[in-house]
Length: 508
Image (cartoon, rainbow, N blue to C red; front, side):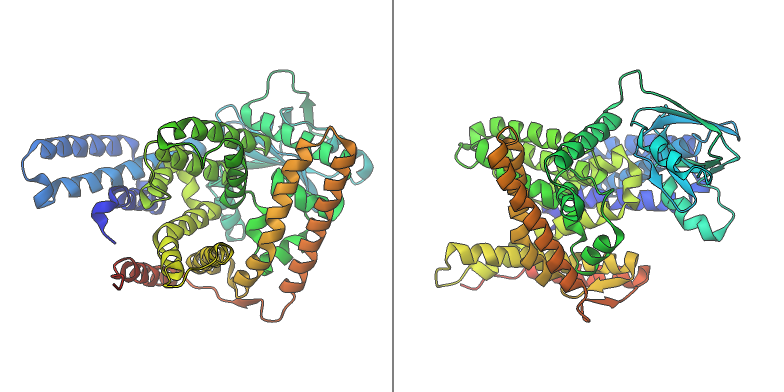
C-alpha cells in the first residue's frame, strides 16, 4: 500500500489508537490535561508546518499523528464522562421519555427511557402476576414519546458493576449510551401521554410503527411479514428467535439488519429515477443531492437505526465526493466517514456492526476492486451477465474473508457456507426490495397492490425455507473463538496479502 495516496488512513490509525488507549486507562484520564496537551501539540505542529523541509525529516508527520492520538483520547474521555455523569442523582426516582417499544422479559417489562441530555435509563418494571392480561393491554397502549416516571427500588449505574456475572452486559449498555438500570414494582410507575412535539428519534420510531400497521392491514404479516418488515423498514421486534438463529447459522444475519447492503440496493434503484448514470459530471451534483435527500428520508422512515445511519452517512460522503470527481469508492472516503462518525459518537468504536461494516467496505475498496479487475481482464471477451456474476462472487468472497476473524472473535463461530448462501439468496433479496418499492408505489391501487403482496409473501417464505435448510446442514458452521492476539494476527496476514496484491505488476 502506498501510504502517500491515503493520507487520511495515516491519521485515522493514531486517532483510533487514542480512543482505545482512553478506554483502557479511562480512570486516569483528565480533560484538563488532555486539552493542554492538544493545545501544545497543535502549536508545535503549526510551528513545524512553517519550517522548511518538515515533510522530508518527518517531524511534522510525527506531531500530526500525536495530535490525532490526543484528539481521539479527548473525544472518547468526554463521551465517557458525559454518560457516566448522567446517572440520576436520586437513588429511588427516575424519569424519561419512552424511546423504544416496551420489551417483555421473563419476569418484567423493559422500557428504555431517554433523559434530557440524550442518555438512556433502562427501566425494568415487574410483572403483575395477578392480572397478566392487564399488563399486556397497558404496555401495548404506551406510545413513543410518552413520559414515564417511576419510584425504583434501586438505580444502578452501568459503569460500576461489582458482580462479574453482569459486568459484560452493563459494559455493553454503557457503551450504547445507557447510564443506569432501574427496577420498580408494577404499581410504582406512572405514564404521561406525549403532549409536546417528539424529538427526531422518537418521531422516526413512531413513524416506523405506523408503517408496520399499514403492512399488517394490507396482508403482510406473520413470519413472512416479519422478514419483509426487517428488510424494508428495519422493524425486527416480531422476528422469532428460531428465524434469527437460522439466518445467523447460514451467514445471512446482515440481510435482516438494515445496513449498507440495503442502502446500496436502494441507491441502485433510485439512481434510475434521478438519471445519475446519464448526466455529465458537471451536473452530477444535482442528481447526487436528490439521492442524498432520498436516502436520509428512507433512514428517517426506518427509525434511524445506528447501522442505517452509518451506511447513509458513508454513501452521503461518497456521493458528495463523486459530485466533484469521478473517483469511485476509495480508502480515503472510508477513512473520512470513519473519522466523522467517531467524532459524533466515540462509542461507535465498540459497536460490532460499525466494525464489520467498515472492515467489509475497506476490503472491497482495497482488495475487491483489484480482484474484479484481475478476474475480468481476460484476453477473451466475457459476457456482461458473467461479469456481473463474477463481481457478485468476488465481493461476497472478500466480505466473508475480511469479516470472518472479527465474527469468530465476537461470536465464537464461523460460517463455512456463507458465500454459497449469499449467492443463492441475493436474487430473492433484490426481488423483495424491488417489489417492496412497487408495493408502496401502488398502495392506492388494490388489485396491483394485492398481486405484489402475494409476490412479497412468497419471496419471504421461500427465503425462510432456503435459509432454514442451509442452516441445518452439518457443516454449516464451525466453532472457532480466537483471542484478541490471534484476531490481530489474522488481520496482519490479510493486510500483508493486500499489500502484495495491490503492488503486483500486471503482465504485459
